[in-house]
Image (cartoon, rainbow, N blue to C red; front, side, top):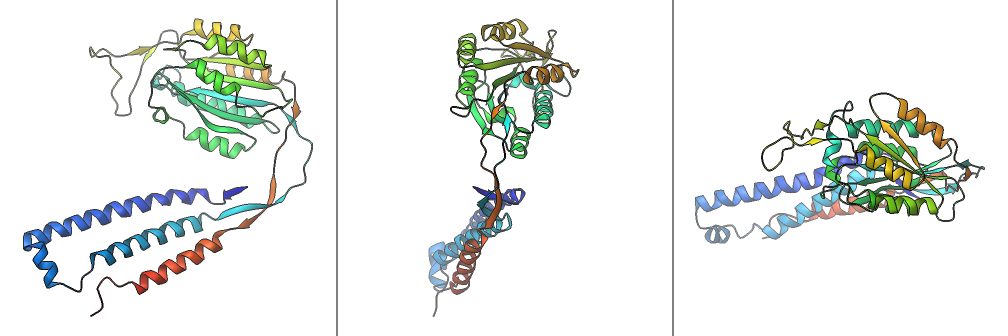
Length: 330
């Protein structure tokens, strides 16, 4: 198993493209100054020792060194020793979360999406021997996190969920259910549950058929309808409200009837999510009824550091950078 022991430092990788942009801007600015001064071709002839190619080589070497240094401080590791396996029994749960724009509505505090994420986080805090996976959907559906017992990673992926992850708007619940049903561990005898959280707006169709199909595979389907029946406008990141082509504010309502129909089709459970904690309690109680099965996990107790090779490569690039001069030898 490969991992970074300090993954937070990987954010420093943004310095690589940032430094490239700054360098290219400075090169372009230098070129403009040269053109104002005189004929660039003539100036190059008057400066025969200056080598643009060597400048570019040194820049690429510097970018490579920066990249390697960031990876080194993030501490790449490979699992080297398996921990002693212990008997574990639990269930497998796939969370399918609607991230369409309507989930930004604030009729449930702080918003439908943030309330959903909080609900999932509370659910994960109850898990100890179980596996969880994350799927996000709007007009399309994607696996955000394959099924795992790594709750730390699950919470990290959950925090990063927002509507910008999917460009296609809509609410394709059928596709989300189909993807979720195919995302469990093959041949696992553990109880399986799909928890789909949505406001039910703009459903693309096919959801009831997928719920029936999931049930035929022994998967319990929970539909969590979030929002109010009165509805609310959709705030946008810039502080404005989502509007129609006529300039009227778009008001989104919880389609509770459709959510109930999908749950009934899969012989599942519908739960309304509001500002109370009732949904948490109902969900915890229903998941507790599922049959627990043996959960297979590969857990590493020891990890070998892998930064040495990167450090050696960084030293080599640094030596090459020192040897390569920006100016040609006379």
